[in-house]
Each structure stands twice: as C-alpha cells, then as structure tokens.
Length: 422
Ligand code: RNT
Ligand code: ZN
Figure 1 (tube, helix red, strand yellow):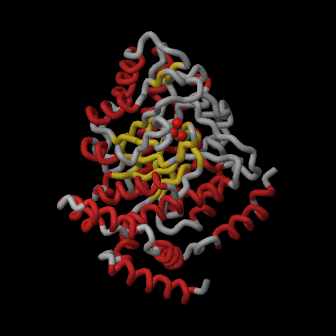
Figure 2 (tube, protein in one colour):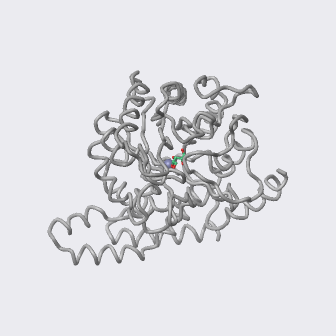
Figure 3 (cartoon, helix red, strand yellow):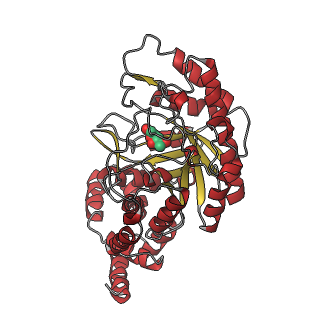
C-alpha cells in the first residue's frame, strides 16, 4: 500500500471515530507515551550468559522448541532486540534478568553481582533510547536446584538469595539513575512443594523475613521500584507455592510494593483483567507480565485475543496508566524468536490502541444512568470501527513496517543472520 492510500484510509477512519465521539489523533498521542518492557529472555530461551549453571532448571519455567537461530552471546541478543524494536512503533524498554550479566568471561556468582556487570547493558540501552527493568534470577543455579530459595529451611541458602536480591536492587537503581527512567526490579521465586505440605505457614514466614531483609534499604522511588510476582504452581511445585497470589497481594499492600500480575499465573479460567482495578487501588503500582497461558502456564506468544483487549481496556479505563508498568513474559523456542517478540509487542500495542479509541466517558455515562442497552449497543458497534487503519497510519508515522511488511524483514534477517548461527 502506498503512503497516500494509508493516509486516505486514516482520514476516513478518523471521521468514523469522530462521529463516535473519539479523537483518533489524540488516541495515537496517548499510545505513544506507553512503553512496553521487552523481556530479554525470549531471545535465548531463558538461558542467560553466566556460562555456569546456565541450564534452565527449577521452578517449572520451561521453554520448548528447537527453532534455529537462538542468540548465543550478548552481542547476538542485542542485535536481535534491535531488529525486533525496529519493527515496533514507539519508544520502549528492555527487561533484563540478572543471569544476562556481562561478566567479561569470569564467573560472578549471584551474590557478587555489581552494577559494573551491567554497565555495557546500560550503555547499550542509553544509545538505543531504551529504559530498563530488572529481575533477580532465582533459578538455574545449584543453590536453587532443590526448588527453594528465599524460603529455604537452610539459613545459609536463604542468606545467599537475600544477598542476590540486595545486589539486584542496587543494580536496578543504577540502571534507573543512569537512564533517567524508573527501573522496576521484579522478584519472582519458584519455591514450592510437589506434594501436599504439612506446614503451609513456615515457608511464608521465612519468605516475609527474607523479603523484608532484602527491601530494608530505602531507594528513591524516582529511580527504582520493587515489585513482587505471585504464581499458582510450577512443574514440580504443583501442590503448594509459597509466593501465592494471596501472599503477595497482602505483602505488597502491607509493604507498599508494586504487585506483578502475570497473565499465566492463575487457574486456567481465571483472568487478570478483573484484578487490575483492585491492585491499582491499594498498591503504589502494578507491573504486568503479559503472557498467554494455554491449558497451563505455558508462556505462549501474546496474541490479540479477548483477554489481551480486556487487559488493555482496563488499563486505559482506569485512568491510572502512570502507575502501570507493562512487561511481556513469554518464551517460545518453536518459532523465529525475533518474530515472537515482534508479534507479541505489536499485539500489546494494538490492544492499547483499540482501548484508546474507545469512547470511555460516554460508555461510563450510559452505565451510570443504568442504560445497559446503550452500553451494549455502543460497545458492539465499537468493535467494527476501523482501528486497523489507525494502527497502519501510526506505524507509517513512526517509520516502522506497515501490516505484514515486517515479516519480509524477519525472513531476510533469518537468512542473513539467524541461519548462520550453527
Ligand atoms: C515464572 C515467572 C517469571 C519468569 C521470568 C523469566 O513463572 O513468570 O516472571 O517468567 O522471570
Ligand atoms: Zn512472569
């Protein structure tokens, strides 16, 4: 399609939205202020670059598939992220795990990590105009091999992981300070029992003690925020997870921490879209791990499905986007990994655009006057308005491929770069 056609299509769409009471230009202006935090771990199947203990194990996070071309080094991963971001409109962020440190070839254990081991990432992020988010890595390590970290009955192991958490907060703060953009450091641990435990309280008491020790030192919230992420179960931890939803919701409210909601961490029919308004009311912030569970916490690539749209609408309707941090969390090793990033990130943005194009005030007014007929009628008509013409125009304006054109870029990258990685 020529630029001229795209502009014409947009002009028509704009008129249609105007007659529904929506300013499409304003919707795009709002969309451009919402960053998505791209998860580094899609690029190499959650491998990381520690070289020691690098095998993905513990906690039931599992990348499956054998698609060729996975990033084998920091340089390759950065090149892949740059490629992906060149096909995504807007300014975004990189979400890094601690096991992706740049250790210069010398093994640095988790409790010895320093900001200097991430300086090359910070420099790279700065030169690419990206903010950064961070995560301590509580898996793929000999001291996590039995599936317990911050709740471990052995105080020595707990202390090791507390130290790791403290290191990571300092690293996250340094990222936020140097990049001039708040870094959210998200704590997720795999700890749980395969079979029915006797003591459900003890691990949670130990977790509280560990977290309180980790978070003891205050950090300026302008540069750094702590987040905690719950989970329902993991492979090998089917019967009990210490850091469950109730646990972390209570912890985050009582300690005023950011709560992370991962779309895959609930019962199969339970959705997070209904939880956002509750969390935003009582927590200082909300971090999303947008994912797609298929029958279990499978971390499939995010598609433009009903739940993704429901999440985006909740975020926009809440009017609290300033307290929300949107991150992606999936890892599919069965398809082109760069394409996986592009598909998921573009879908997240499409969902947000659709939400920004909603006449929310009018819908709320109908609801408040109990006119549920009008609410339903308007919502259903809204679905057939031409949001895709607005999206294409937005991509064109931002200088990224329009429609399926990005896929040609992926094919070229696959032939010229990925296929050469033996
Ligand atoms: C695991 C959590 C966690 C991880 C990443 C890699 O179930 O979702 O967020 O996916 O830390
Ligand atoms: Zn997650």
